[in-house]
Length: 320
Image 1 (cartoon, helix red, strand yellow):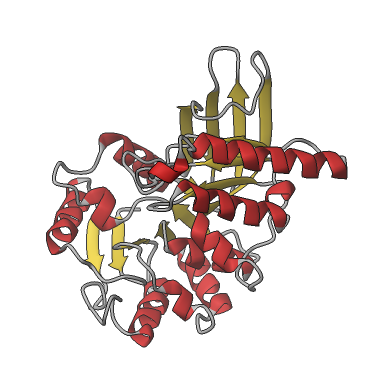
Image 2 (spheres, rainbow, N blue to C red; image 1 turned 120 degrees about the vertical axis):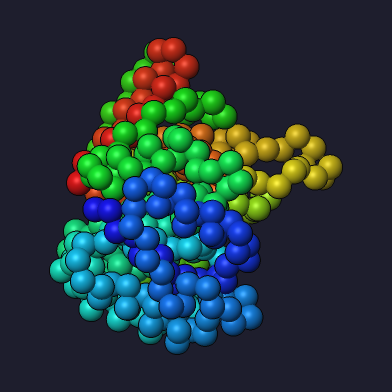
């Protein structure tokens, strides 16, 4: 698959130079790049009106020939469209043509909505976007590009990292679980609670990340997912790069590891009372509004292994 179709389903492009660099970087990486007519539109903070962005999504799915459909960027906007997206038709078109739908951040809502409304195994790559990941002044990071091309060209995900900011696995222990990998932006997942667009995933490996959220808000959203029963239904939770702003003096040393420890304790109490298996929260997963970044396929079975003999060595693999 060497064709990339760029569209803008959410926020307007705010850095035209970064966008051009991103298109050039994709071409340099060997992709034949095309643009949706809406890609550069602007209506207030959005990439065109709601109707124009909805049309761009539907049009992208209907394109003939297998292509990678990549969002130019995220930014708020998809929540406005959720009621009007023809979910079943969209899923059928993506499946028919074999498209890969790629993006993260606000694109989380689009991908999870498709999962909730389709029995088909769609190719939903939670991965890089044009402006941020490919449009940097120094070019796309080699690690980001390597993960991306491995997923697009071979349907493979193989991510290794060290869990440093939290230690949910006792020294000397090992953990091995498998299940559907899913998730994305933490705020977007919380916004989908109680709606028809959050898939009911049990026994999964849930990935969460966010940006520009103070730690107390991250903790509050994680607790919301725990109290809603989402976290307790998983086999593991991977917290990616949260890119939180600098702590305030009011925090008095309170940081992300403290928030994760609080949520882990609440989750442990829940699973113990229910007589279930412990759900470990692992930090430092290399994904988020940061670079370099890995990528993963939404809803595809993955294998997570954790070895705590020498630090906390983690590995996540998937195969389409």
